[in-house]
Amino acid sequence: MIRVFIIDDHEIYLEGLALLLNKQEDVEVIGTATSGRQLLDRIKEGLNADILLLDVYLPDMPEEEILQQIRASHPDLRIIYLTLLRGTRYVHKLAKYKIQGYVLKNASLDELLGAIRSVQNGGNYFSKDIHIGDRDEDFRHTITIEDKQIDEILSRRELEVLRLICKEFSNAEIAGKLFLSVSTVETHRKNLIAKLGVNNTVGLVKFALRNNLTD
Image (cartoon, rainbow, N blue to C red; front, side):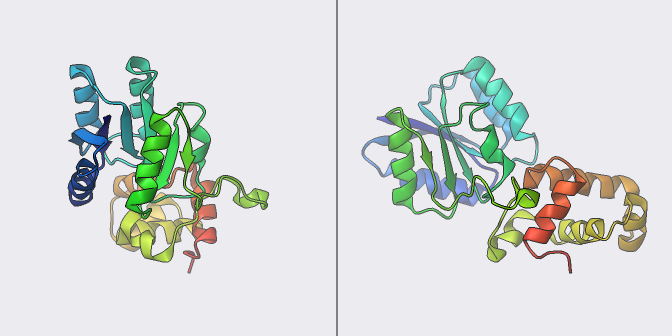
Protein backbone atom coordinates (compact mmCIF):
# COMPACT_ATOMS: atom_id res chain seq x y z
CA MET A 1 0.00 0.00 0.00
CA ILE A 2 1.35 3.43 -1.00
CA ARG A 3 0.78 5.92 1.81
CA VAL A 4 0.12 9.41 0.44
CA PHE A 5 -0.14 12.76 2.21
CA ILE A 6 -1.66 15.68 0.25
CA ILE A 7 -1.26 19.41 0.82
CA ASP A 8 -3.32 21.91 -1.15
CA ASP A 9 -5.05 25.13 -0.10
CA HIS A 10 -8.13 24.45 -2.25
CA GLU A 11 -10.26 22.29 0.04
CA ILE A 12 -12.74 21.08 -2.59
CA TYR A 13 -9.93 19.94 -4.87
CA LEU A 14 -8.11 18.39 -1.91
CA GLU A 15 -11.13 16.43 -0.69
CA GLY A 16 -12.04 15.26 -4.18
CA LEU A 17 -8.51 14.08 -4.91
CA ALA A 18 -8.27 12.25 -1.60
CA LEU A 19 -11.57 10.50 -2.33
CA LEU A 20 -10.41 9.37 -5.78
CA LEU A 21 -7.03 8.13 -4.54
CA ASN A 22 -8.59 6.22 -1.65
CA LYS A 23 -10.64 4.23 -4.17
CA GLN A 24 -7.45 2.66 -5.52
CA GLU A 25 -6.45 -0.75 -4.17
CA ASP A 26 -2.80 0.21 -3.75
CA VAL A 27 -3.09 3.82 -2.49
CA GLU A 28 -4.11 5.17 0.91
CA VAL A 29 -4.36 8.87 1.73
CA ILE A 30 -3.15 8.99 5.34
CA GLY A 31 -3.69 12.71 5.82
CA THR A 32 -4.21 16.12 4.26
CA ALA A 33 -3.30 19.73 5.00
CA THR A 34 -4.47 23.05 3.58
CA SER A 35 -1.48 25.16 4.62
CA GLY A 36 2.25 24.97 5.10
CA ARG A 37 1.86 25.41 8.84
CA GLN A 38 -0.51 22.44 9.07
CA LEU A 39 1.95 20.29 7.16
CA LEU A 40 4.88 21.27 9.38
CA ASP A 41 2.81 20.57 12.50
CA ARG A 42 2.02 17.12 11.12
CA ILE A 43 5.70 16.52 10.37
CA LYS A 44 6.56 17.32 14.00
CA GLU A 45 3.97 14.77 15.12
CA GLY A 46 5.34 12.20 12.69
CA LEU A 47 4.56 11.94 9.00
CA ASN A 48 4.38 8.26 8.16
CA ALA A 49 3.96 8.75 4.43
CA ASP A 50 5.68 7.29 1.38
CA ILE A 51 4.80 10.17 -0.94
CA LEU A 52 3.92 13.82 -0.39
CA LEU A 53 1.75 15.51 -3.02
CA LEU A 54 2.72 19.17 -2.63
CA ASP A 55 0.93 22.17 -4.08
CA VAL A 56 3.72 24.49 -5.26
CA TYR A 57 2.00 27.67 -4.12
CA LEU A 58 0.66 27.97 -0.59
CA PRO A 59 -0.45 31.41 0.64
CA ASP A 60 0.91 31.15 4.17
CA MET A 61 4.50 30.07 3.50
CA PRO A 62 7.04 30.11 0.67
CA GLU A 63 7.40 26.58 -0.73
CA GLU A 64 11.19 26.82 -0.42
CA GLU A 65 10.88 27.26 3.36
CA ILE A 66 8.53 24.27 3.49
CA LEU A 67 10.91 22.13 1.45
CA GLN A 68 13.89 23.08 3.59
CA GLN A 69 12.09 21.95 6.74
CA ILE A 70 10.81 18.77 5.11
CA ARG A 71 14.26 17.78 3.93
CA ALA A 72 15.79 18.55 7.32
CA SER A 73 13.56 15.98 9.02
CA HIS A 74 12.58 13.66 6.14
CA PRO A 75 15.48 13.54 3.67
CA ASP A 76 14.15 10.44 1.93
CA LEU A 77 10.47 11.37 1.66
CA ARG A 78 9.34 11.15 -1.97
CA ILE A 79 7.76 14.41 -3.16
CA ILE A 80 5.61 15.14 -6.19
CA TYR A 81 4.85 18.74 -7.11
CA LEU A 82 1.17 19.20 -7.96
CA THR A 83 0.61 22.52 -9.70
CA LEU A 84 -1.05 24.63 -12.37
CA LEU A 85 2.29 26.17 -13.32
CA ARG A 86 4.47 24.96 -16.16
CA GLY A 87 7.79 26.11 -17.64
CA THR A 88 8.71 27.76 -14.36
CA ARG A 89 11.89 28.06 -12.34
CA TYR A 90 10.21 25.68 -9.87
CA VAL A 91 11.37 22.92 -12.19
CA HIS A 92 14.96 23.92 -11.48
CA LYS A 93 14.51 23.24 -7.77
CA LEU A 94 13.90 19.56 -8.47
CA ALA A 95 17.49 18.50 -7.97
CA LYS A 96 18.11 20.89 -5.06
CA TYR A 97 15.28 19.45 -2.97
CA LYS A 98 15.21 15.96 -4.49
CA ILE A 99 11.74 16.32 -5.98
CA GLN A 100 10.87 13.11 -7.81
CA GLY A 101 7.76 14.24 -9.69
CA TYR A 102 6.05 17.25 -11.25
CA VAL A 103 2.41 16.81 -12.29
CA LEU A 104 0.02 19.44 -13.59
CA LYS A 105 -3.32 19.76 -11.82
CA ASN A 106 -5.21 19.31 -15.07
CA ALA A 107 -3.64 15.86 -15.54
CA SER A 108 -5.91 12.83 -15.65
CA LEU A 109 -6.29 10.57 -12.63
CA ASP A 110 -4.53 7.83 -14.59
CA GLU A 111 -1.53 10.10 -15.15
CA LEU A 112 -1.34 11.06 -11.48
CA LEU A 113 -1.60 7.43 -10.41
CA GLY A 114 1.14 6.55 -12.87
CA ALA A 115 3.31 9.26 -11.35
CA ILE A 116 2.66 8.04 -7.81
CA ARG A 117 3.45 4.43 -8.69
CA SER A 118 6.55 5.36 -10.66
CA VAL A 119 7.93 7.51 -7.85
CA GLN A 120 7.09 4.85 -5.26
CA ASN A 121 9.15 2.37 -7.28
CA GLY A 122 12.17 4.65 -7.26
CA GLY A 123 11.58 6.44 -10.54
CA ASN A 124 10.79 10.02 -11.52
CA TYR A 125 7.78 11.44 -13.33
CA PHE A 126 7.32 14.76 -15.12
CA SER A 127 4.18 15.73 -17.02
CA LYS A 128 4.88 15.89 -20.73
CA ASP A 129 3.40 19.42 -20.94
CA ILE A 130 6.08 20.91 -18.67
CA HIS A 131 8.61 22.99 -20.54
CA ILE A 132 11.92 22.79 -18.69
CA GLY A 133 13.84 24.97 -21.10
CA ASP A 134 13.22 27.43 -23.88
CA ARG A 135 15.17 28.31 -26.99
CA ASP A 136 14.69 31.99 -26.30
CA GLU A 137 17.13 32.95 -23.55
CA ASP A 138 15.03 36.01 -22.65
CA PHE A 139 12.14 33.76 -21.70
CA ARG A 140 14.10 30.93 -20.12
CA HIS A 141 12.67 29.83 -16.76
CA THR A 142 9.48 31.87 -17.21
CA ILE A 143 5.98 30.48 -16.93
CA THR A 144 3.47 29.73 -19.66
CA ILE A 145 -0.09 29.31 -18.43
CA GLU A 146 -3.25 28.46 -20.35
CA ASP A 147 -5.59 31.47 -20.53
CA LYS A 148 -8.34 29.71 -18.61
CA GLN A 149 -5.95 29.12 -15.69
CA ILE A 150 -4.75 32.71 -15.26
CA ASP A 151 -7.84 33.60 -13.24
CA GLU A 152 -7.29 30.56 -11.01
CA ILE A 153 -3.79 31.73 -10.09
CA LEU A 154 -4.02 35.52 -9.98
CA SER A 155 -6.75 37.72 -8.55
CA ARG A 156 -8.23 40.61 -10.52
CA ARG A 157 -6.32 43.08 -8.34
CA GLU A 158 -3.04 41.20 -8.81
CA LEU A 159 -3.53 41.37 -12.59
CA GLU A 160 -4.12 45.12 -12.35
CA VAL A 161 -0.94 45.57 -10.33
CA LEU A 162 1.02 43.37 -12.74
CA ARG A 163 -0.08 45.40 -15.77
CA LEU A 164 0.93 48.65 -14.07
CA ILE A 165 4.30 47.17 -13.09
CA CYS A 166 4.84 46.41 -16.77
CA LYS A 167 4.19 50.08 -17.54
CA GLU A 168 7.05 50.96 -15.16
CA PHE A 169 4.91 52.62 -12.50
CA SER A 170 6.40 52.74 -9.01
CA ASN A 171 4.62 51.28 -5.98
CA ALA A 172 3.52 54.78 -4.96
CA GLU A 173 2.16 55.52 -8.43
CA ILE A 174 0.30 52.21 -8.56
CA ALA A 175 -1.15 52.92 -5.12
CA GLY A 176 -2.46 56.27 -6.36
CA LYS A 177 -4.02 54.81 -9.49
CA LEU A 178 -5.74 51.94 -7.68
CA PHE A 179 -6.62 53.86 -4.50
CA LEU A 180 -4.54 51.52 -2.35
CA SER A 181 -1.88 52.04 0.28
CA VAL A 182 1.73 51.64 -0.77
CA SER A 183 2.13 48.74 1.66
CA THR A 184 -0.80 46.94 0.01
CA VAL A 185 0.82 47.34 -3.40
CA GLU A 186 4.09 46.03 -1.99
CA THR A 187 2.21 43.00 -0.65
CA HIS A 188 0.62 42.39 -4.07
CA ARG A 189 4.04 42.60 -5.71
CA LYS A 190 5.51 40.09 -3.23
CA ASN A 191 2.54 37.75 -3.75
CA LEU A 192 2.95 37.94 -7.52
CA ILE A 193 6.62 37.00 -7.23
CA ALA A 194 5.80 34.12 -4.88
CA LYS A 195 2.86 32.79 -6.92
CA LEU A 196 4.67 32.92 -10.24
CA GLY A 197 7.95 31.53 -9.03
CA VAL A 198 10.06 34.39 -10.36
CA ASN A 199 12.88 36.21 -8.63
CA ASN A 200 12.11 39.89 -9.19
CA THR A 201 10.25 42.54 -11.20
CA VAL A 202 12.05 41.53 -14.39
CA GLY A 203 10.62 38.05 -13.97
CA LEU A 204 7.13 39.50 -13.54
CA VAL A 205 7.46 41.48 -16.75
CA LYS A 206 8.70 38.42 -18.66
CA PHE A 207 5.73 36.45 -17.35
CA ALA A 208 3.31 39.16 -18.47
CA LEU A 209 4.90 39.38 -21.91
CA ARG A 210 4.84 35.65 -22.44
CA ASN A 211 1.21 35.38 -21.38
CA ASN A 212 0.00 38.50 -23.26
CA LEU A 213 -1.04 40.33 -20.12
CA THR A 214 0.54 43.71 -20.77
CA ASP A 215 -2.45 45.40 -22.44
